[in-house]
Image 1: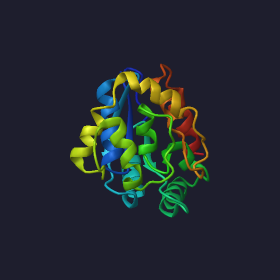
Image 2: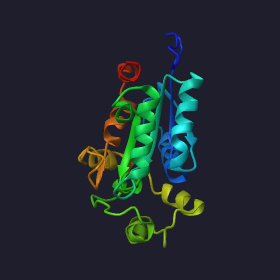
Image 3: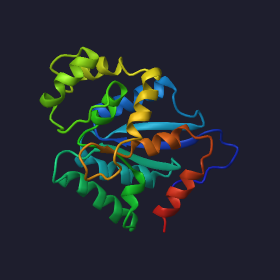
Image 4: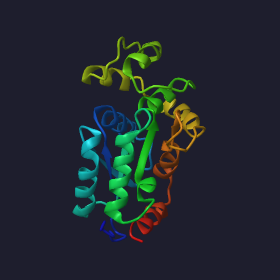
Amino acid sequence: MPNRLPKFFDKHKICIICEGNEEYEYLKRLKDLKVWNEQYDISLVNAKGNGNIPARYQDRYQNGADELVLVFCDTEKKPHEQYKDIKRKINEFHGVDNAADEVIMFGNPCTMQIISKHWTDENLKSPAKPVNAPLIKEYTGVANYKGRSDQIQEVMGHVTAKNYEDMCRRVRNLELDDSVTGSSNFGRFIKMFESAGSRWIEEINKILEE
């Protein structure tokens, strides 16, 4: 059970389990840009693969050091088998049918769907990097994007506080249904991370502990 930290603690501790390098480096970039409310102390864990997410989530939740544990991952292509498995395991861990819907931040079909919103309205239709590479080159200059560490770092250099506002606007217009290609609920969490009020943390935990 997450800690109920005394009120004299300045910051609310939130942990985000990131599927892999792309997710981890993107959220790290947003943290470094300080675009979210400073009352949140957000720590990031790189699960290094979607198959590791449920165990990392469970370990961090049971550790009790955080007020809230979230997940940041993509759905991959239909039939979204691994993504559905992550949701099922999180629901079973909490014993709550919709627990995963409260804690998973997703991009369908991939996380680049969210990242690309810093530069374009165009929706991605495939998680395949070769398919999306031309778009990434157009807006970042990074050629033949394959998700290598050096390429990710170069792409993150084009994520700025200024185009963060463009991303927020665009992401909030996306479908929220995780089964729909071109959807994401990241906008919902952005609003929470920017907010001065932290009641949303309690509300999520209340659902998880029903």
